[in-house]
Length: 154
Image (cartoon, rainbow, N blue to C red; front, side):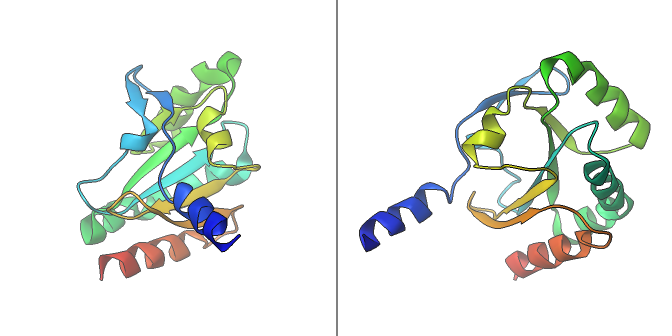
């Protein structure tokens, strides 16, 4: 039983291999997401999810500072269904989000990670290991994200 548990833990430590499109229509393999050996954040959202949009707005306010200090990168993954996918780019542009935006209209990536609800945030270290997961958003929660990223930089 212990051996099985160790295997399960290891199996979910890396990002799953799912093919998505970015906001410009380019194909992206989620297992190959990286940030030049530095940590990155994956934030699942939807256009209709108010807490998601508040979280991404709050991060946008400090994103330049975060990038300057730690080099962190953010991948925002929309789980909007195909019928609503055309609302994602206008929302991103309207909010001025400078994230790498990926589209997961069938929730393949979300499901592969076992995510039930959004907003949902993952932090991935420079080696591609998922080191932090957080569900939901409350004002100020973005501070915990950058604190975790800073810990990884030590």
